[in-house]
Length: 297
View 1 (cartoon, one colour):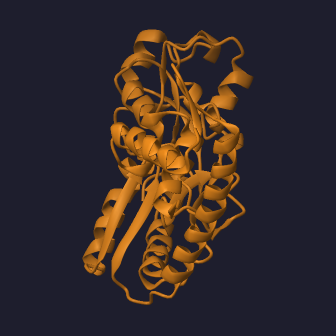
View 2 (cartoon, rainbow, N blue to C red):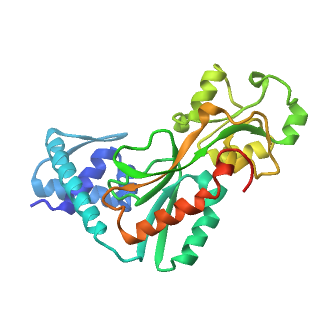
View 3 (spheres, rainbow, N blue to C red):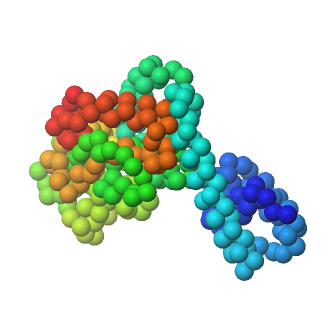
């Protein structure tokens, strides 16, 4: 008889298509995924996945099993959220997802102050570009700059986040800051960040641009611009306080997005999550001018 733990492995492998991807999602070793898959297939007496050199694909039986795993997973996750929503203790763990730029820019001291005020609440922080699923409880709270927050989440728009083009004074002296933008050296987002407004703006404003460096993080673009490698579009809250950078353009209106503080509707009344949401809303509100590119706070 199949159990939910078996179906978790089918679900993860069916979604990722590779042992490594499934293992990363489940937090186990790839060999564990392979071993558990063999056990599940032996138990049901039918092959669920075809093995290929570059990954795994579902058999017809695997597609049926994955459909069941998805239905059960949705129900289990909904139950977990409802149960968590009844937890009114201002203690426990809150998992937060945010961007590396926010963490480097303003979030470090803000979260430090939160911990001092709420020592019984433990934080798990996941920083990076992917927008983790709050429906699957990959995270409880998301703090993200976005023009289009997911409709499945609830939250508040904390501020407007402006972006401008920056470069180091050394680069501008060497390359000539008065030259047209198309003649400058550019540090640009790579394909993994193609969804960013700054990436779309570069493609539209400078068609055919060949960047001197492409990066998979805005934080890396910031570091490279400060080092003199070229121009880069960087959020003002990160670049303005940096004495190693100068603005090349004013904030670009079409690159302004909202800074959203989000959670799942089933979790918004959990005491520890409510405490973090309320604290962040007030604390980050003190940085609105910095976020908007209007200067330091």
